[in-house]
Length: 511
Image 1 (cartoon, rainbow, N blue to C red):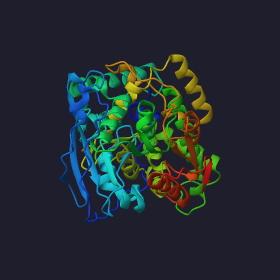
Image 2: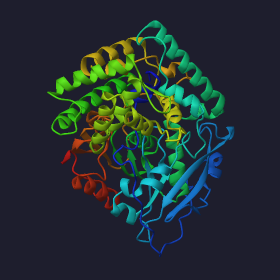
Image 3: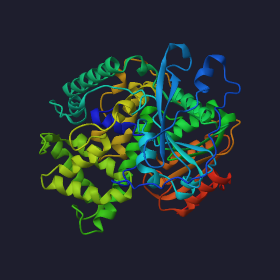
Image 4: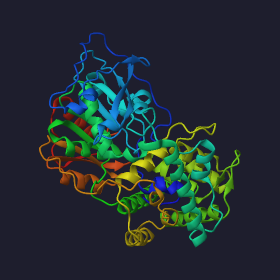
């Protein structure tokens, strides 16, 4: 992936949780009657892996209705004797007592915490029928959060990396050199502070961890709901273990066949389109900081970005709001239509010389707390996964992508491109980009949203076509991912499949 410090996160923003709710609701307590947990599934497991697969989780209470455990996994699945890592797991017990089994989930990122998704956002992320029937299981993939994690910078260093203003003018050779040096320092810190883990933070390794979790939970087949990047993890699992892929739902799909440069380009175009849709909505209201047509508003926004790029706005905490951070704030708000009023406030504030609301959105996206501490390691894990998963981009691919950006996403394009952080990574990428077919797997449901800015609808169409038994469900609407949102049609299709095995009609259109 390429990009400036904050834009590197955006260039392949295989994002996790949408910013649809800035506070998350609570969850129900479990029922009473409950059978004993099933024993780990070890049939057919090679002897060198048996000690991992034959470890029953030691669950401990960690909140009302929640239990937590730690599972040991090989550092390297291809050489399991090299060492071990830990995977943090949380489950919410089925509220009706006797569960249908375990429903595993991943919120995306890569780098978002599945533990946090389940523990802090259960009712926001999962409908009541799933919460009643399943033990909802969240986990932090390798490299992430409470699992053995990638570590790079401390809080102050991360502030400078994500929010620092380059000294040289944008686009000059000096600017390129400055950002390249910044990326090299960051990569060196990741290597120094993460150790040998860094080489094995890949989706292929994480998919093998997912099979381990399936087995230790006593499940013959995987039941899974993956969002955004979690769709790539789920599709990779189905490719590796088609005979164990049970009911899989992939919402907000990643196309596994496209290059890193193409991912960044298509996403920029998606956000530019979402920006136009937002501005059309904004101009119809009373609180919009713009006036005139959508094109007039885009021109004014471009001028705003150019202004803060040249003269960054100071915040009360001493940080400066430059164009890169303002783009991060805009993108954060575009993930869900419910966030558009926050974007109104942020852009109004910038017009008035106050960057507080813009920093609020950017900080939320970057996982930065009000006290300046980073609440997670999502930036570090995001970078690690993408640098290992995506083959290096050629200069010709970069040039073609930048030309397409300038044509199709002119507002965002000046702040989307830059030196490739992954070119400085201490390990070469091991991932490949190719179609995933999951031959031999049961039907896999792929959900795509026509107005999704982060994982464009065309990716859901492509993934459903690639999978040998892919089933496409389309939500005609805005925002990133669709399940448990406004569409009863989507919710019913997903829940009917996960609960009863009812395969939706391929090509089902929901509104």
